[in-house]
Image (cartoon, rainbow, N blue to C red; front, side, top):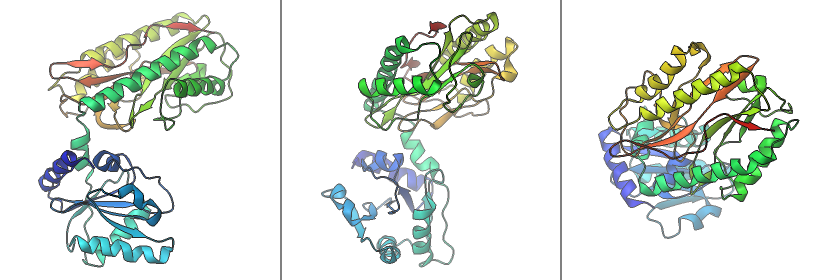
Length: 370
């Protein structure tokens, strides 16, 4: 249990005019308590208030996880008929009658929510469950030195794993085969088995889809090969992308790769304390637009990164949120030519007290594989 984080949460709850926050299994619960639970048919919910120790509702079989921790546990048996009553006891122990209980809509499952809703509703005719995403996000968005160190290691592992995979790539291999080799190397180089996402390996026309699914398509000369991958260390992740030339590629492929490389550099250079997130997106997008390929850059320039592959803050042209020391995010401009080829170059950046540090340094130039 991380008491300094719980203290900050109490302040955040009070500032948000919330009486309680309910979390189910996921990154925010891990961040605040260090408790890991699998999402399963057995509900798990933790309730945090500003002036009580946390309450957690969990299966009896998970009780050893909370032994000795400063929480009040409400365990339930394997009989689902008893679960509603246990949830009600937990809610009533905190006196949440007619209180505002916040939830994280992006994380909260209907399973846990229905039990909480019924328990609070039993005490109040008009239960209120406002969006409390910002309550935890305000805490998680600024990484401390230990968090940055874990992310830095996750970047190093990811880069080493891809470097070990590159010599194995051959013309005629399928996207699935390359991704399989990369996963093996990620594990060998030290990534946790629960990676931030399954690697994206896409060649030729498939590379024009930013979030392409792995296929049995074989890579061939003239393809651009996009590899989007990451590693996980101590619960923190990396998220990188590099684009390669399979054999000889045409002049336009080399051109768009150079443009994206310049856009990536511009986006990285735009990050500094006090700059709006929009500045990162605008800097990268301007390079691509001025080169005449603006319509082929179809997504935001980046997203926050930490315990999740996608979290606050987001590098969008309309996001005026100011960058602060400790914020970490991706810079990943791309150009996608439908049914032809695509390029993306992605790095991980963290804001420092006087600028920004790029955690990734793998070669960004157009390297040849196969």
